[in-house]
Image (cartoon, rainbow, N blue to C red):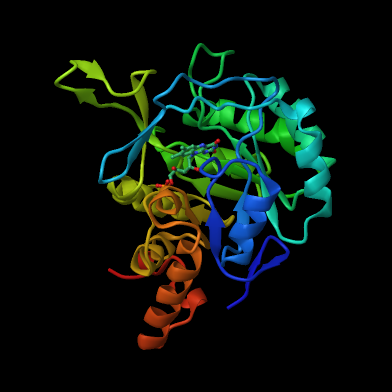
Length: 301
Ligand SMILES: Cc1cc2nc3c(=O)[nH]c(=O)nc-3n(C[C@H](O)[C@H](O)[C@H](O)COP(=O)(O)O)c2cc1C
């Protein structure tokens, strides 16, 4: 199966989610060779940033809690990554974040000059300008950052949204109105907290963290469903996807592409081919095409 997405041909609808495998060219290339249609780089920030202290990621069985804290060398300190990016022969999304509209714009403009296939803005992370608020939970600030970035980049723009928004459809509409070419949803859910009752301490050094993996799938499906109702631009749906039936479910909610993050940690990089094969089998057994099922849950009942 090949897929058309914003003018690019992808070998399948699978997307590596941002952040779970870092930014090493060799790893991202291996993920693509092992069956992933489109890979996303880890979010790149305006300045060097260490991230939070360990432990930063804990497996909870039903998914993970993490407070990695957006570690980044800063976009001006990534010469190797930028050289590799220009030489690559597979499609890539570069993910960027900032602490203000101006920072998003600065990072995205620079990254655009390195010619990734797409730029994703992670507007689901806290920013300093508004005292820890998240750009993507407010329609006006989402609109501001999307339109500012759209003005300075030369590749299609994807806005990555947070499930914390009160009305994620409204946020998606603001992003579409400001010029976003696609929406990616969802980022991690939370913040949550897990306490070790023997030590009486939160398990994460940062105490609170975002949830991912199977436990957040129903929230991801609901968010994609609401976004599909609100906008015309395509959606990358992710959150707890780990097998073919999960992928079919989020496509029926309205996703055109399917992202996988935590399941890579659980199942290794072969998970992309496994999910694609399971989807293909299900579609063949039901005599349906991939296109038939996009948003199918909106057309019943
Ligand atoms: C350890 C870890 C690091 C992450 N880092 C980023 C990041 O840098 N940028 C981003 O947009 N999302 C980041 N995410 C969120 C994932 O891309 C994804 O949206 C989320 O985990 C839900 O998908 P999943 O349930 O398949 O993991 C991270 C998630 C995890 C678990």
